[in-house]
Image (tube, rainbow, N blue to C red):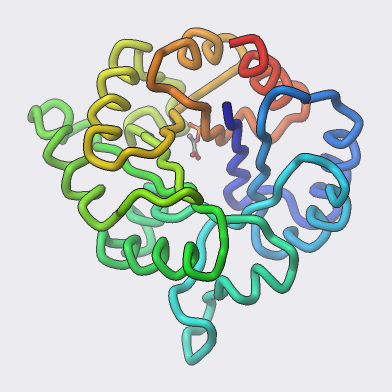
Length: 232
Ligand code: PEP
């Protein structure tokens, strides 16, 4: 089981330090834990979590090593910092920053080539689900990805992210089974995972962990979800 916390645009270096100091005192044996702070907070997280089993990942990565790409960060730079992996293709990047299936594919490929662990996100919007297009959308998003030992997917229905609406365990299981039929790698569930719904989601056969947004920002709720994963 893998539990990853996506901090989005929350926690600068000072708040990151406070969180990591608390996290490293927790006993989380039995679950793989990853935190994904904003770029400016990666260095302090790497330093403070060094020597623990907790990994640090970025929230995106560019596909070139270097160049005229204002605002972007390369896999090589992340590796230099001691970062373990990265999220790619989060729906907020697709929705607000013009991320496409093609750029997701390029980012994932470059990150894996550089030796980073990758959490690649897929998921349908509410409208696409209502139109019965969930499988078509997932198939299209997954068409740019190939299995790799360092790749996991996150199934994140867009209608469940930050909305408090969680997929039922049955909906999650059905989507995860479909995702795995396309690209055979572990699949995390993401979308309003909280301490009180984590256990039933994580109990599904094809749910291999969770990508947690809002509930990863507080140490108590994040570690409660990690503990649910240990028990499942
Ligand atoms: C996410 O950001 O990946 C996410 C799933 O957010 P939340 O848990 O807040 O819905």
